[in-house]
Amino acid sequence: MKPIDFRSDTVTKPTPAMRRAMADAEVGDDVYGEDPMVNRLQERVAERLGLEAAIFVPSGTQANQIAMGLHCRPSDEVITEVGSHIVQYEGGALSALWGIQPQGLPGERGLLTAAQVAEAVRGENIHAPRSKLLSLENTHNRGGGTVWPLERFQSVVEAARKAGLAVHLDGARLFNAQMATGTPASAWAKLTDTTSVCFSKGLGAPVGSALAGSAALIREAQRLRKRLGGGMRQAGILAAAALHALEHHVDRLAEDHANARRLAAGLAELQGVKVEPARVETNILLVEFTRPASEMVSRLATLGVLLNATGTHTARLVCHLDVSASDIDEALTRIRKALES
Ligand SMILES: *Cc1c(COP(=O)(O)O)cnc(C)c1O
Image (tube, rainbow, N blue to C red; front, side, top):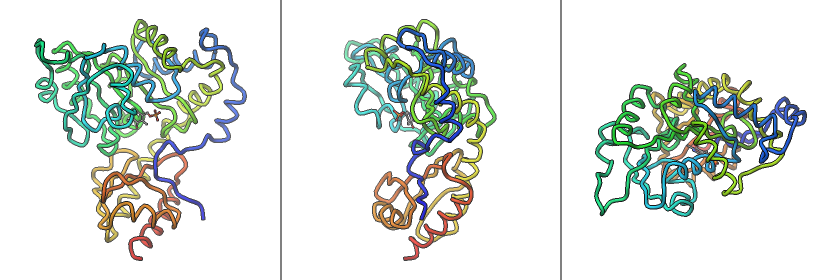
């Protein structure tokens, strides 16, 4: 029985064509700036995001944390949504690495309003940390793969600018937002000072993320990457996978979105699980089981369906490159069996 793995879009394996691109990569020492594939990737990412420059890094966490270090000094504050990746899933890096304090605002499936941001910014006051940065996430993971409508994003960024804040976008799944809306990734990114993107999520590369911004910020980012131990040598082997992903795996994200909708529609027919198909915007699907989520996760694992619990009764399913439309139908059969037994 082939397991169908909905735990994350990080579980994808490189395709044979991607492995060939990696094997054929021309390489050099990237710490000296001499790796042609890394240089090409950085240029392509900057172009796609409408920003001046970009830097290749090992992980999305490192891309985000370099941005935090660029924009804030110890005791400064980053304003963000309370469920954001930088707060929930980066090992306490904000405080451990930079001495930054987060102010997490409650979002609407991960999205904030301009009024919320304007109200959260601290005035000049010796009691308060200095608000320096607004950090947003598109698509929003904990929100359920939510896309930021461009106008709402613009208004929130404008509120931050008015208060003198820098803006970072965690765009781990920004290309999912692009494919879901037809709006180019650059439309969001060019409104920001820095934007990160991941190649190892739905794009299917084994390793790697990038941070884009102005040439001056990215020069400083090279120092912070080195400090964090992220200076890699013949990294072109990895950059080749990311380049291949950018060329061949962006448009196909639409299939993952269609599969997530197909899965939601199928689950909506079943007893013992609640879903809101209308809320499935991209490749992430949040569900609520009548039975405890931990019980459903282990019951489903024995039937070859893998997913992650997110709460006592809630779980997340993520569609990706290694889940096909027929896998969705097979998964629905297995899930029905688990719910009925
Ligand atoms: C996965 C992810 C990241 C980066 O994660 P890494 O595992 O460090 O590459 C950042 N932000 C969001 C929203 C993510 O989903």
